[in-house]
Image 1 (cartoon, rainbow, N blue to C red):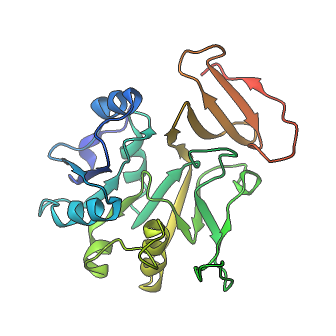
Image 2 (spheres, one colour; image 1 turned 60 degrees about the horizontal axis):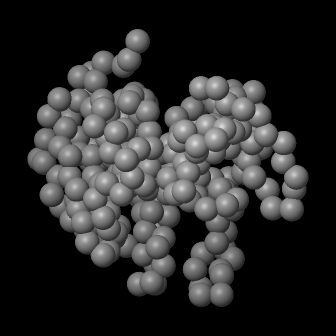
Length: 245
């Protein structure tokens, strides 16, 4: 049984993109996405993702109680938004991998005082083995904005510009958003039971079965899906298992 979409107030789904609907899988998933009646769908297109995101927040309907950020290179289940809304949290995001090998998780479980060569703060990336066996919610220090659901009160408290990078060059607006929100007392949560796919030549999905791992979905080419327990680690020979569903 699917969750009741109208058990929640309407919000805004924001799609910040360089090119609209680059991938057919995103288009299909977006068409069937369940959202509360009255939810606003915004597509903001320009060369700057940060500009698109800020324009989207500024364009939210007055009655939008939440913002859901979805890039056009993502894949997701029909009840994806409702699963996040059910938590009733200020900031919650799904499990998501990076677009390229080794497909590490886009979530950070520890802050750091260390800086990289450009003076940007470093964070410790969440590893597949760090995902709780029992699943559920996990508090983190930051996540990527892919599929991130943000309540209106957080955006009102932060004020414009809601998204900004640290040095004018880096694409770290999502991590910076989480850091600023935490400074105001908000918590950032990761829903380890709700994955979102990242699309390139194929779609990479983080998944938790008997153990956490990585699914590579080739969308009908050859072996349709393969599962790599524990994720992909450089220098390690991996066993794979077919994924049937």
